[in-house]
Amino acid sequence: MASSFARVSAFVALAATVLAAAAASLLVGGTDVTPHDLLRALARPEATGALQTIVWQLRFPRVCIAAVVGGSLALAGALLQGMLRNPLVDPYLTGVSAGAAAAIAIAILAGVAAPLTPAIGFVAGLAAATIVAALARRGAGIDSNRLILAGVSLSTLFAAIVTLAIVRAQSSDYATAIVAWLAGSMAGRGWHELAVTAPYVGAGALLALYAVRPLNALRVGDVRARTVGVDVARAQWVILAASSLLAAASVVLAGMVGFVGLIVPHIARRIVGSDARALLPASVAIGAALCMLADAVCRWIVAPAELPIGVLLAFIGVPSFLYLYFHGGEASR
Amino acid sequence: MIELRDLGLRVGERRLLDGVRAFVTAGEFLAVVGPNGAGKTTLLRAIAGLHPPAAGTVTVDGAALAALSPVQRALRVGFVTSDDVLPDALRVRDVVAIGRYPHHRWWEWQPRPHDEEVVEGALAAVAMGEFSQRLFSTLSSGERQRVWIALGLAQETPVLLLDEPTSHLDVRVAHEILALLRRLADAGKTIVCVLHDLNDAAAYADRLALLGRGALLALDRADDVLAGEAIETAYGLPLERVRSADGRLRVFARAVRLPSITP
Image (cartoon, rainbow over all chains, first blue to last red):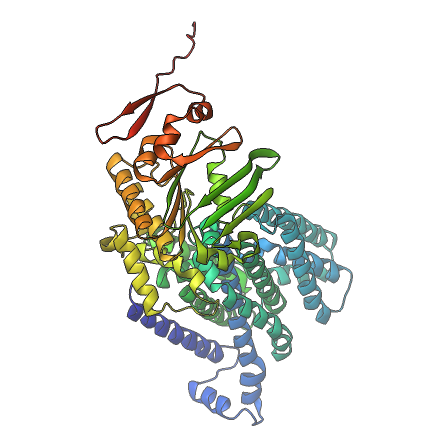
C-alpha cells in the first residue's frame, strides 16, 4: 500500500467493519433484540431483567469470545507465515490444536468432567507445541523445514489418536462430544473462560508487538535479516511462543476453528500489504470481524440449533479466498 | 579498521582456512579472490559475524566481533550477501529501508526524517532513485544487485562487505558497480569484496587477498599478487601476464585441454 492516506482509510474501514460485525452479532439470536433494546441494555449494565441477561450474560461475552478467537488465530497465522515466509502455514502447524484435540478426546473418553477439558486442552496444546519446537531446533534457532515437518508429522499422529478415540467411543455420547469439540463452537462459553484465557492472549499479543520489526526485516530472508542486526533465533522463539499461546487460548475458547489463521493474513496482506506494522493489526481486525459474523450466522441459520463455526467458515470462506487469491494482484500472494 | 588474528574457519568438519592474519585500513578497497571453495564467502561471513571462527578473532574498529550484539555488529559492518531471495510484493524503497533496522529500538516503528534521507541517498548512490516505488520483483538482476547494495549503504556502517556483487551482471553494469565501490572507498568506507574476475579486482581494488589451499596465500597490491607465483598455485592453472596500455598487469588463463574421450 503506497500512501499513508490509503492505509489510514483502510484501517478506518476495518474498524467500522469490526463494529458493524459486533453489532450484528449482538442483535442475532434465538430472542429478537432490536437495536434500541440493545443500546438500552448496553447503557445500563447494572439493571436486571431478561434483556440484560441476554445481552450481558449470553451475547456480549460470546461476541467478545468470537472476536478474541478470530483475532488470535489470524494474528498467530500472520506471525508464522511471516517468520517462515510461507503463505501455506497456519497456527495449527505448531501442533497446538492437534495436541489439544488428542488430549481432550482422551479426557472425554476417560470421563473427565467437562469443565476441566479446556484446561487439559490448553496444557496439552502448549506441550505439543513445545515438542514440535524442540524437534525443529537447529543451533540456537529454528529450522523452517524441520518445523513444518515436525508440526505436520506430530499433528498426523495426534489426529490418529483422536480418530482412535472416536472409534473406541462409537456407541456412546462421547463420540458426539469429541466431534462437536473438533467442529469448533463458542456455545456455552462466557466471561469466565474469557477471563481465564485473557492473560495468555495478552502475553501473545505483547510478544507479537516485539516481533513487528524483526518480521519486517525477515521479508528479505533470514541471512539478510541477520546482516541488519536481527537476532533471528530470538525472533523465531518469540514468534513461536506468541503463536502457540494465541492458538492454545483460542482452542480453549472455541475448540478447533480452522481457516481463519490460514486465510485471514492473505486477505489482510491484500488490503494493507506485507508491512507487519499494518499487517498484524489488520489481520486481528479481519479475523475478529469474520468470526463474529460467522458465529452470528451459525446461531441464526438453523435456529434454535447451531451450525459448527468451522463448517460455516470453510463453506463460505474457502471459495471467497480462492477467488481473491487467483484474481488478486501480487500483493495478495 | 578490520583485523583478523590467526583466524581459523571450519564448515562442519571441513577445514577451510587456518592462520589468517590481515589488517584492512579505513577507506581501503580490498578484493578477496581465490578458487571456488577456498573460503572467500565464509571469510566474509566471519567478518560479518554470521559464521563463528573455529580459532582466532575478528576485530572491527578495535572491538572483538564475538563480544558484540547483533545490532552492535550491524552498526559496524554491512554485508551484501549473494543470497537470492525475492521478497514478495515489496517496493524498492521498502527493501532499502530495512537497512535502517539497527538504528531503531524494537518499539520504534516509525522512520525518522533522517531515515528517509538516508534511504533516498542510498538509492541515489546506486542510481536507483527513480525506481523507489517499483516492485522489487519487477527489477532486472543488475537492478536488484544495486538495491541490495543500497540496503547495505542505508545501514551507514564504516565497513561494507560484498559477496560476488558482479556475478550474473553484464560487463557494463558490473563495472558501474565496481566503480561505485571504488567511489565509496575513496569517500572513506572500508570495502571488502569477493570477486572472481582477477583483472576487475586488480583494476578497482587497492589490494588483493588471495585465498587458496586452506590459507591466505597473498595480501598485497594488485600488481604484486598478479605477478607472483601464489596465484597460479591457488588456481592450479598456468596464467599469461600482459601489461596493458594503462600500465596495469592483466592475467589470462591458458586454454585448458581435457583428455580426449573415445566414444
